[in-house]
Length: 271
Image 1: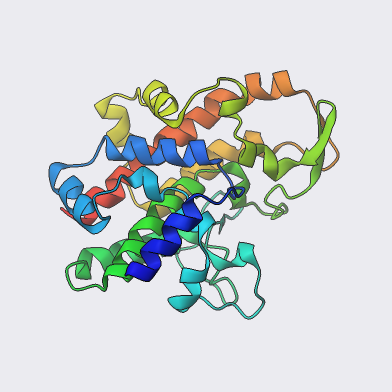
Image 2: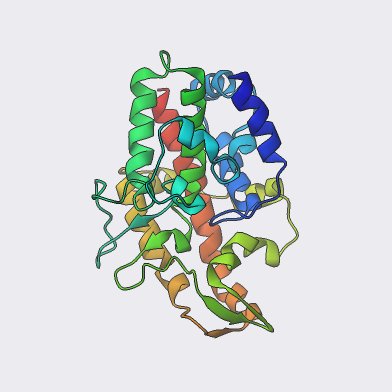
């Protein structure tokens, strides 16, 4: 465990680009979730995550991939992006599959793995190896955020994940990287705690409604919400002011839902 802890500390200080939301957005999702944990879930997570906040591990999946290999993640075609199931597919009705298809094990159904990791933790968290348990929890924290990011959803006819160039104002840039840079941060210079505080505004009734169903229902909801944010095509000229004005409210909604749903997953594990 000491080896993993040292490597993790090093990794958390490495400057790297997040694959979807930026660091602030992932941290805000974790902070919202933390503020909605049950006392029992908070106690168990405090113990299992070495008395550290969920926020501490919110970008763990982007920062430190070698641990996945240690735990058996060995895709035949090694690529950094392939090391973690961070996207999912939907059909023409925005419904995701409830399984992994052959060849999809590493990239195309993070919903399946969120469900799998959560079940394994619920059934066996007291008996798990410390490193495996911590990794399961850290990956769930990150993956629930990722599943709500518009460029992490593979739509029929558009499985690009936004990996193409657009003209954003005066700058040519990768559309996916707009999300890495953090749309919210481009509007307001907030910290993650500021962001979490200002978007954690849902009523108890809204939270309960958004957390109904399972992770596949949430995936469908996120996909339907994300459709307008995927209207931008390769080489399109995007006006930054209009882009922010048109999409900021939807982005905040997706981040808000991600936080509440992450809390739901974690609370259910330790109920």
